[in-house]
Length: 456
Image (cartoon, rainbow, N blue to C red; front, side, top):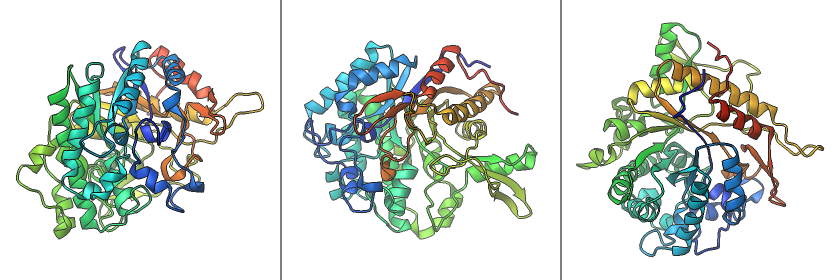
């Protein structure tokens, strides 16, 4: 069934992945610039120095976004482009760039949805301890205030942090992402607490400095767990596992409740505190009140899911069947994530939801006929959006969907080998070629949904 005419259809990107111009316009190095220059950190030694050269192609790319018929574009602001020294000196040239981008979008009737932190804090901040320094929350609040002061006369929609589970788990615990640290569990838990404080102080800064009515959320990611069948006990098992902190001795960070419970409910989950024991961070008086600032929506970044059932000893995960469809990233294709994920998150946190990222890495190239026929992406998105529509039809308050991503881009430690875009980018010439999925998504938006029967 078609979704409401008020539904927000969008596409998304992030600053470091597409902007390029890494040393132009007064921008200082980010933590990802330094990480990319460490041998063996990024596939093929690739960097975001040029990326998609979006910095120099604002008008061209704004046309590509607008021609889709979307009414929103999720972008991020580069902290080192705005406050090159972390705090203090404001880089007017950096703000002028975001002026151009925001104005180009609005001129085409596309609303900018701004993410304030998508992993690229200034390298100078890392030299001062990064997220391990409690002052990082205040630094983030100052940066947020500068951006909101400057852009909120035209921008109403804001997100504080993107995927703290990743920049903490992969960046500080596993060492696979910038800043490339392999810290103890105690240290990473402390860093996560400071990041959540930054979220809370960032929300306060948005509300204090906004020149127009603001709509504020965040964009976390965590395991979506779906039932292996429709038995009530399987559904309960999936719900329980989706809100547990598993892998306490491994990458504990890829979960929902450790991050979302403090933000929305004002408390850390008791079972996790018991697991972590003395490794749990010191929570000072007023911290949880600071973190739990009122937000207007919950952003859900979702690509895959796990399966669960009720075993003899309680809820348990179920292995994927041999040959399960997988993206080129190796992530299993589980469209049901778009039904059960919103349902479970809505039940627990009772906030309106936006799907702030969803898409796949696929094997795309320009064919001999000059076209990019990414039929796999079309099939993937058809299945996932159909399940999202099923969730909405069952009463879940989902108000928008942002496809990741508008164009192929720098995929972090994977460099340029993963292609997520609706638009193909030739990284030698920087030529943009809309893929078959681009035209398909435009038709979906025009008719208000995928117009496919949602599997039950």
